[in-house]
Length: 252
Image: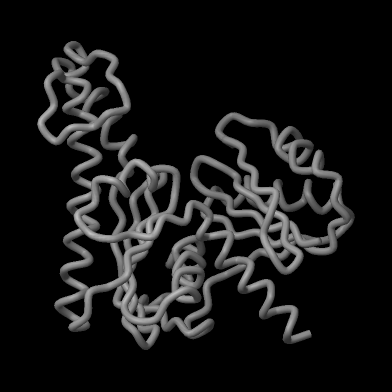
């Protein structure tokens, strides 16, 4: 049984892989003890034959997590890295290693499911967007603050806004009727508008309306507000990682 991990800026996500993915879990790692994360994963009581880690978190944290998992399951962890031309994706970056491995894996996961141009939007701590042409050419991407970072920036750096903010429900309206709701609305619809604009631009470049994939913690909040059809796959990075693991197995 393979243990697959997606280590982000905020959460460690994992799944078990034996030809299919199951047993998804996650743990917020800020201020968390690595031993507690490993103990939570080990509670599944699986016979682990491989550990595969894709991480955009701090190098020290990532290495310590890998070492702790190796000690727990008595097998060395494999740290997945971006490849310039692999899995039918040609990375646009002149230095492919500078592309976040999570973005690369999400594109692999999305491309496996459809043909034609693709937009992949990961709404996590940051909002990342990447575009793919129908031949697998990565046209590039963008990164901006995620919805919660936008909200925090407004509330922390604008005293009057924070002073007038109140608790609101999860219902999001474009034209909000109180300050806190307006902050939430602004961040959410900023993300929606950026994704829709990226889809329009990729359609202009490719001549075909792209398929849009949403992933990350904010995906389910964004999807109902989008003015175009979207695919919501919360664990798209792990799905892409599973495809990499499958391919590595075929090469052995």
